Image (tube, rainbow, N blue to C red; front, side, top):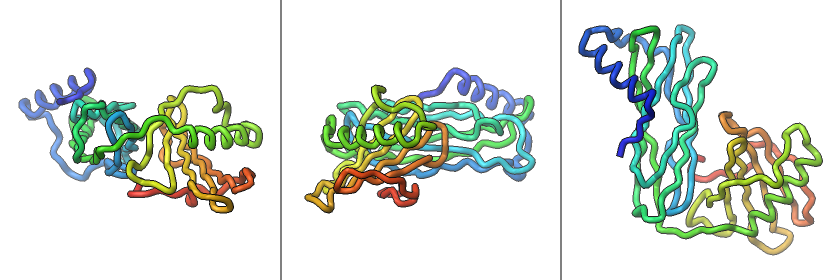
Length: 245
């Protein structure tokens, strides 16, 4: 099923009208590039996931880019921002697959309509892939415990980031079917928080933590918990990722 916001629906009508009337600018050099930080994620029924999509404007870029998303209904895909420009370059697509979704590969298609004044310049498209696994993953008390250790330390050592405890987060397993190292994602309106835990005996029972401000392209901070529960900052690049995300 198509999920089209009211504003983007009007832009699609506008595009159709301009094509019919001959008011669409000829496609010359595109003034921006439409990109996704990654184009593939794994998920599962009642799970979650997030894509980060952005534009890279060139020197001649002006106007606005209107986004139109088409996705299977049972993915419950949501677009955080459907209009991009020089002051707002990034949007996020979150998915929350329904409990009755069938396993398999699902596709999200995103069209970007570039408009300057009353003229449609170009249309760019991108396809994103969600692989849904036959997998069950409810709450994870172990990762909750490790998350709380990190955020207590963070609120004490890095008060500039604000408050993380006593907030509500949506949790999902980041990488279904991956064991030994558990990976979880916690989302709220302000933060994407990732926690991983090496479920082993000491001294190999380390954990890592990473945070990204919602609406930002890259993570802001990462840390590691050692076997004795001491925590220290690490480069963001050291936080482990799988499958490109």
